Length: 351
Image 1: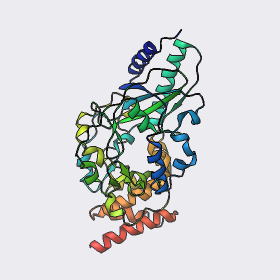
Image 2: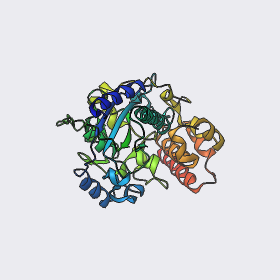
Image 3: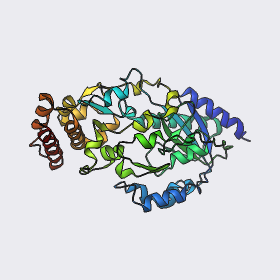
Image 4: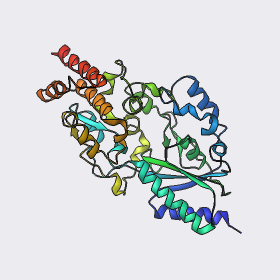
């Protein structure tokens, strides 16, 4: 007979050996979160992310997504890259490109999925064949709600998970399983009256505590949105060409964020501190080769240029900035040409 409490302890130990900072277990009752998800979708705050609504209640009912699921093993893996240039210093230097720090190294999907699969295999070696499925931000999973239930932290007012020992600078991954492991207890929330994340948001995407209109969020605009970035948001984006960390950078709990020990998350291609004009010069082949294995690769070269064109439009006028924009003024993509044209008009108006 399996001692499930002892197995849970073993799972935590195996997780730590695999590099996870924390591993815990949640039950599958997300009934408290389901109405909030339904309201968010009804308001259209998911924008073009149709996949958020595609699977109905499977997102909030794990046993309907993976039949037989009784528990969810939730793991967190720190991602803060060592030796990266200080984020605010880059954001304030308008001719440099700011890239969200989770994306400056290897694609976390691949790293996390591999580690979770190894953890699942450790469990199988101990208990024999069992039913499970591994997820890494790749299916309709309410990972923050599950991580809350597992006691890995609490939902901050910016809607990200916060942890007293790790801030919010970590990835989450899940193993859905039919093993009746003891569930861990949730933590209390520790945001209090703080609203720094709300006040700092460049586009005011956090419309109220715990309520995010993704259509206004710079991460959505530079990563998820496939078409034209609305003009009202372009000046507010500044030099943030892939994602936005402002709400995390200002959060007091991120004083405790841990630098990652993972070689996979070491900065690649100097993406922590690079000129916008330099990135804009990458042709499609250079983009593909340099960003292979990166989370950035999935947006494609066209949207990469779109984003950088906005950054260049917000930069101070220099010969390098203007030369970069003129070099793409006749780009084959209408999307790129539109954003380059907007950027050149900004500089002309400021002259």
